[in-house]
Structure formats: C-alpha cells, structure tokens
Length: 163
Image 1: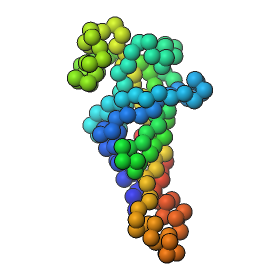
Image 2: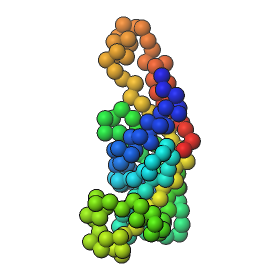
Image 3: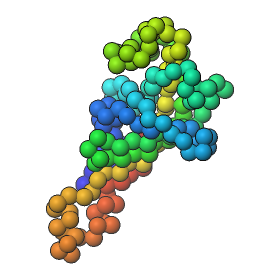
Image 4: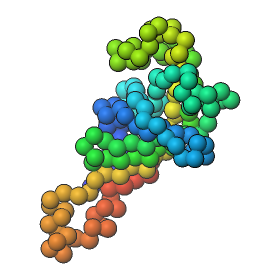
C-alpha cells in the first residue's frame, strides 16, 4: 500500500512526464480552468511553470499580483489524479525563460524569447489531494469473492499532502 510520500513522489514523476493540466484561478472565472502545458524541474517539489501569451485571460487577471489558483491533473494512464492548490503569478525573470526554453515552446513564439506576446506563469503548489486508481483484476476478484471491502482497499490510495 502506498504511503502519502509514495503518492507525492508519483505525482511529481507523472507531472514531469505527462505535463498537461487544467489551470484556473480560485474564486474567479466561475470555476473555469483551461488546459495548459506545465514544466516541472527536477526534484519532488514545485514550482510548475507555464509559457503562455500576454492575451491569455490568466495573465490579465494576474496584473494585480499573485492569486490563489488550482491545478487539476490526470495522468495519461488514468491511474493517478490530483487536485493541487497553490498560488499563481507572472514571472518575468529572463534567466528562468532561458532555463525552461525548448523547441516546443519556441514553436509558439515567432520572436523567440524576446517575443512581446510571451508570458511565463509560476504556480507554487502548497497542497494536493492525490488519488491512485485502486482498481485491478485482482482487486475486482477479491471484491467479487467477498474477500475485501472496496472502501477499505481504496482508502490507502488517497492522500492529502503538503507540497
């Protein structure tokens, strides 16, 4: 059975490989979130970085400074889900842009790293609720045979962790 630390490590590994999340502001936009490609640097910690355009509504709403935000994540294999709370702000450090720049990002900005449309957002995660898919052929067979209670086996596959 995974520990909360196991689930946390698995979340970071999945975020680095799958990268697509739903990002939105808490209490704003009536719960609207949009798909964004995140970049996560090495280690089991944040921040999550997002290259976007200056005309993105998130950039406009962050003009007054950092705001509470939420990231919703589902791994490609649909075996891990997470709801992550944190703060979102625009980051204008050119060293960070240089460090994170890659061919996939460059394809979106004709002017390269100096493109006036370029904006970089920084999401600093604070906590997450993580769910691990507890269903399997073995688990299903055990439930069918009355050997285990699905509620009991599932409770060890969810954790709220500090990030």
